[in-house]
Image (cartoon, rainbow, N blue to C red; front, top):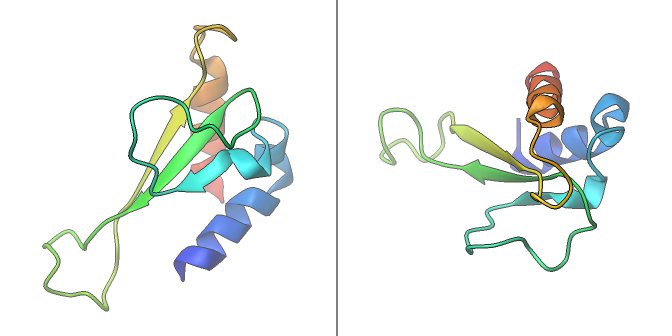
Length: 91
């Protein structure tokens, strides 16, 4: 599955949309701190890497790591984060 297809599937999932705004699912963000272009609330960062065996198989499978963040001023309960990550696994 292509990266664009995965991103579209996550952004279009209705269960995930109830927890995180589609524009708050971003790719390859690497700066410290919250991105300035996301709406308030939970946001997710998707990061594609090389295959499990390294980058030698560039056309093969890729690892996907998903980080979910909830700003402290909104809450410190991990329930929403856990639910959102479970939804990502389902998608």
